[in-house]
Amino acid sequence: MKKQFIIIGAGPTGIGAAMRLEEFGITDYLVMDASKQAGGLSASFIDDQGFTWDLGGHVQFSHYEIFDEYMDLALGKDGWYYHRRESWIWIRDRFVPYPFQYNLHRLPSAEKWNCVQGLLAAVKSSRNHPKNFREWILETFGPGVAETFLFPYNLKVWASPLELMDFKWVGDRVAVPELDKVMKGICLEEDQVSWGPNHKFRFPKFGGTGAIWQALAARIPADNQRLSRRVTRIDPEQHTLQTANGEGYEYDYLISTIPLDYLVEQIGDENLIEQAKRLLYSGVHVVGIGLEGAPPEHLKTKCWMYFPEGNNPFYRVTVFSNYSPNNTPRPGATWSLMAEVSQSKYKSVDMEGVVDDVIQGMIATKLITTEDKIISKWHRFLNHGYPIPSTNRDSILEKVLPTLEEMDIYSRGRFGAWKYEVGNMDHSFMQGWGCVNRILNGGDEQYEPTLNHANRVNGKYQKRENGIPCQKGKTTNEAAIHT
Image 1 (tube, rainbow, N blue to C red):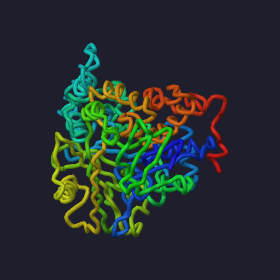
Image 2: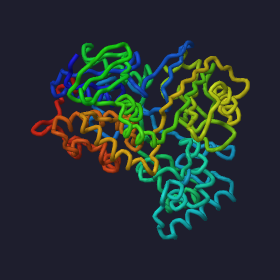
Image 3: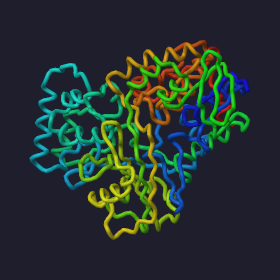
Image 4: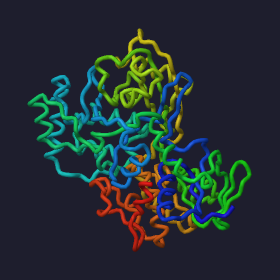
């Protein structure tokens, strides 16, 4: 079969590319995925007891007007619950609101002063051009905040030495301290909780996050989709690929959303393989715990919680039934918690014992008690969970991605482009959308602002007219969006 475009992966990036092709009236394309359902890392699953689970604590917020229009297209205006974020940190046997540095008043007095001393010293000190993420934390926050929260928490999340990580990705993901806000919180003993782009978010009423991508995938004609098709070999010279079930396809342009290291292995280029092997990533164990009854009073309004300490294995736990009561089989009579545990070559996890370890950690952190009745235990391991922004990442991508593009292969998405700073669902969708724009405009990089200008797209809500160029001489086909 010959197609102008073949898209590998039916997650947000692949669907974004397909939607853009549909907008332009291009029908000569095919979306392929190894899974039986669309969604990729944003898929959802229903376990044997009727609990719905996501592949991690996803929340729906956006940097783009275009993406928001597609979310409304997927589920309508009324298909969502709208939430004000309540994110907390469990530390020193108490909950502290996030961001930590703006809510120090909740700490014990001695530790509070230790954190403030470090912040004051950091403000007064001259900048020393940090070489890595660890140095950036120390220089920006001082040793008190670093050693109390940021070091242990980030080690839990990334499962990698912080010295191996760059810091240029932080953007709108880390609240750089403003001293007046820090002191206001301490002096007034006032919680400050509204920081960040996701302080308001929405979540599907039914079906978990995966419902979004199922709905959009349903708008792609059936003849343009091939699910349960795992690509096993790509020949860039012949512009062909093969699947595990023996099918062969020819393409003009290939948009790949699978992990970059997997992609180059299928191409078989030894130089690219060696480069990609140097990229760092962590895996994630997602553990869902379904319970009888209702959440305890101290969890009734919380969204998700961070856990920097060592008496539990997880770095984050989401009160998943708070996102939608329909994530449980009997709303109001059942509730659910979803934990995430990281793993990497630097940090091993007992695959067989991780669920029991999570339950014991939930008891230790007072999320549940030994009296709570657990009726569901669900576990999935994502080998590729987080693309780590390592200090060598950009130099690797600057070699690998252009080499692939010379072969008419465009690697995009959370792990396709390996850029955590533009790896959320909205970013990933727009990477696919922008990639089609670029190809149709002769390879002009200005048509991929998400891929090439992370700080710009994260720094301001992207209206149609302020940074998302369309095809030359055309605007987005809004009729196609709202059909």
